[in-house]
Amino acid sequence: MSRNLTQKIMATHLKQGELVAGREIALVIDQTLTQDATGTLAALEFSALGLDRVRTEVSISYVDHNLLQSDFKNPDDHRFLRSFAARYGLWFSPPGNGICHQLHLLNFARPGATLLGSDSHTPHGGGLAMLAMGAGGLDVAAAMAGYPFHLSCPAVLGIRLTGQLSPWVGAKDVILELLRRLSVKGGVGKVLEYFGPGVATLSVSQRAAITNMGAELGATASIFPSDERARSFLAAQGREQAWQPLAADSGAGYDLLEEIDLSSLEPLAACPSSPDKVKPVRELAQAPVEQVIVGSCASSGYEELMTVALALKGRKIAPGVNLYINPGSRQALAQVAAAGGLMPMLEAGASLFQAGCLGCIGMSQAPATGTNSLRTFPRNFPGRSGTKGDQVYLAGPEVAAATALAGRIADPRELGPLPEIPPAPPVRPEALVPPLADGSAVQILGGPNIAPFPELGPLAEDLSATVVLKVEDNITTDHIMPAGSQILPLRSNIPAISQYVFQALDPDFAKKCQASAPAAVVGGENYGQGSSREHAALAPRYLGVAVKLAKSFARIHRANLFNFGIVPLTFVDPADYDRLLAGQRLEFSGLRAAILAGEELIHARVEGRELPLTLQASERERKMLAAGGLLNFIKGSL
Ligand code: MIC
Ligand code: SF4
Image (cartoon, rainbow, N blue to C red; front, side, top):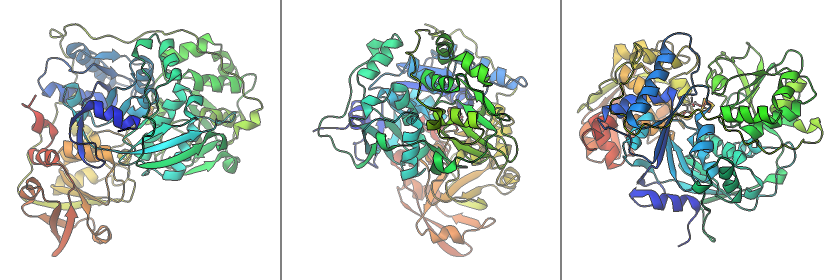
């Protein structure tokens, strides 16, 4: 039987289940990654499992999200993570080394392997033919312990690429075109698999930028084949032995198909404040911009930074514009320096920052009130930049350079011929710390802000929950559990961070929950899209949220709800969403028994009437809910 690439990798890693779209499967995980903002919790969770060492081919703990050390909290977290890595046999990537996804592609990605990361942009690794998926920290902690990863078997959307990108049109325009066509919900339940003659025209860095932002479509993963370009990328990293050719079998089919003629694409940008509000740059070309940022996991490698350097060469950025360059890795920065790219940037007036996520997660670089900011980042959810009412546009490095020079959103094709990017110089300043052969004597270094993992009780027989908040469609995990410089330093402290849940939508949410727990939250479609942060499930659970009712849930957040014992229910009749109001009380009698009996239809009563709801869950997920979450469920079984 001929198989597409996704099916081939799933088949070689299948531990349980059948490869039928929509059914629960369990896949063996070869590699894991965590980053600091999700990694401290994942580390506490892994420690709670009582093992002596990680049980993967390779696990890496990266520090990239929070590099601001305004008090003891963040340096304590970094030190904790370093000692955790040494204790349990992980690689450690210290702050300043770069963004996890950029570093992982350069140093660890391996065609044909599976990668689970506690960050939603983990699919970046799909640029090198890995099945790379984002998940909550607890799922990643379980994978570090050798536990297979459970997910709903994805359908495969084949995307046939033909033609070749025109000058000044880049990888970001490919993925923005898909977002324009399919929306932020278009990839839910699917792997986006690229194939066709256009693939060979794209570099590995371009492929990874495309697979990275498959996360914005809600896709489980995105993947490119492994070919000669993948081989030379790995050879340049001194890792050619990791290469193998990999592609779909000839004649393999796809559940769904799209086709993109790369030659037909033009520069695109996503408008405020959703990655799928995509328009051609020429239609936006008069919008004034005061801030331009080049960086983030999607667009900050050698090629992207050199594109900007060469576009700026001999020119000056427009007066009143701040152009920030955030390199994706120390290596990319060193390569740009060696290739002569730094001087054109500095002479043009750009400011250079250290390698990391920085403004992408609201850790500095907030735009001024009422001004437009254009960024090469993957996300522009409202307020994520740190400024209330922000107006953030997303585009590729080509558009970013042209915009910084013009002081308004500008089409890079106005810049004349596209200069050729020289091959990447062979410099690789190494700052990765390898695992110790035996870490059993290493002491874990804590700190006053690193709180113990909260105890979660099992699900009660009956539940009576008050609707504390009702929200719209496409609510992101940034809405539920905001990040930014005030809140991110509290990621290791659930009691403290929980006070900020839903802060922008209802500043009293935490107080109301604690006063009326058990609590319920009502949401629309695609509830919980975006970031993988499990804090968006654990912190509400800590506050007493016991059940969430929505029209539909985004994949990672749904899994995180099960992991922390919050019951995710969907409406049988969407009109019930309109009828439900904050303050109403939902009565579920015999809830635990119904869940354990495998019942899909769950009955609640509200204001004296019946409210039929659906629980779509596997037997394992049901047991997890009853146990009060995954940690309780797997403890002892390893
Ligand atoms: C993001 O881009 O939203 C983040 C910050 O990288 C998150 C992870 C987090 O919240 O720590 C993600 O994408 O999963
Ligand atoms: Fe970091 Fe931004 Fe990428 Fe998230 S999207 S990993 S915050 S650079």
